[in-house]
Image (spheres, rainbow, N blue to C red):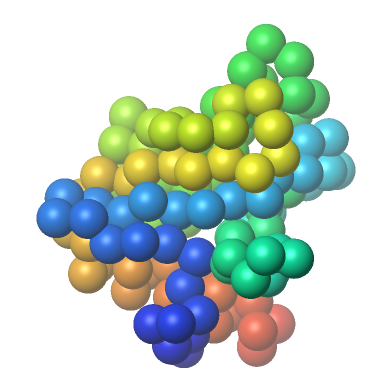
Length: 114
């Protein structure tokens, strides 16, 4: 499991702020793991099939994060980066449960399990 220092999110009292590097028109909807940016920040690498037109890719990212975290899409909101590849999403819910679910999803990627 990822250590606390290796997490691309910050804990809030009512959820998480998740840093994402998005790849629109990526051929599939998938979380691909964690990447380190040139400035040392960690991001969750996510690709979606949707094009970055009219908010379609942002909506697809929101739905994929919600599905992965086991929460309603309405509990995921885009906070920053609407027009860029680097985005911040807020996931509302129990922060320890959300972090645990995301940790498990990342761990499955590392072992090749789906």
